[in-house]
Length: 136
Ligand SMILES: [Zn+2]
Image (cartoon, rainbow, N blue to C red; front, side):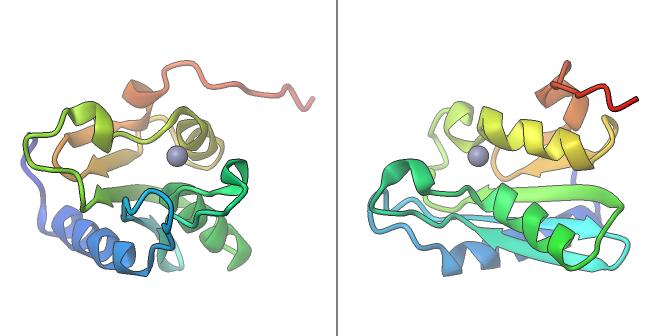
């Protein structure tokens, strides 16, 4: 595990607190995320739906909340699966592929992603070759 700075730890604590708001009647797997932007920190939690495919991960809720508030610069994101046991595989604590693609849409490859119990990663380590639409 990488050494966390004071700021990293604060963002991670915010993600842990955000998980308390999770709506997860199906999985009972509480997840929280917090993203740091130029206009402040935004939180997200996982929100499930009886139609499973409509459920949304904490990371995307945090990013979309920040975007809807006008944020344009995303510097770091922390995510915490507070129900993952200490000895659970790191895999169960990692962001899913859909979230990695959304992070890559808004964050630079050098942005830090702090994953509770798994370590701190550069976004480029989590998704080395994201899909990009050539908008020229
Ligand atoms: Zn996800």
